[in-house]
Length: 176
Figure (tube, rainbow, N blue to C red):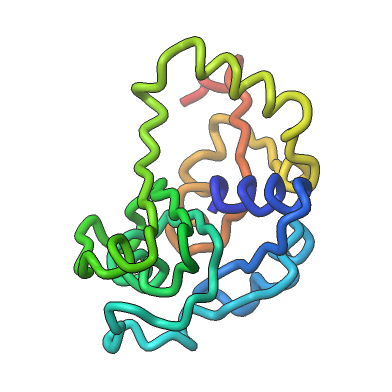
């Protein structure tokens, strides 16, 4: 998705070794173009057999799926690792134990951008406009006319849209 794409871009730019998790193997080249060094296919993970603690693999993670994927990430975190939870595309529920938190000091951070205080928001916007500015993900922007929204929505629901979409509004609205 869009947020995950921007996260890959920024983290790679900052020098992190980024591993992208995807359910769509055909998106591997796209994810690499954003800066992912490795790709993990979601189908390669048995989410029905998540142990409370798995092999300590990740120092940090950004999760936009929630549910069993988030539980798996937490179980795989290294000592003092942090997971930023930014969405619930798979599931709003989280079935896990406290073991990653009390034995490895793992942190789970919820991101709620709508309630972010304005001074922090402005500081983050400044960093996003400068040193964190995504460069690869920004190239994945398509512009459509307002009248094209129904067709674009259909493609989106079929999983055929990636990157960002900018909608041109104006004179063509009158024709609807």
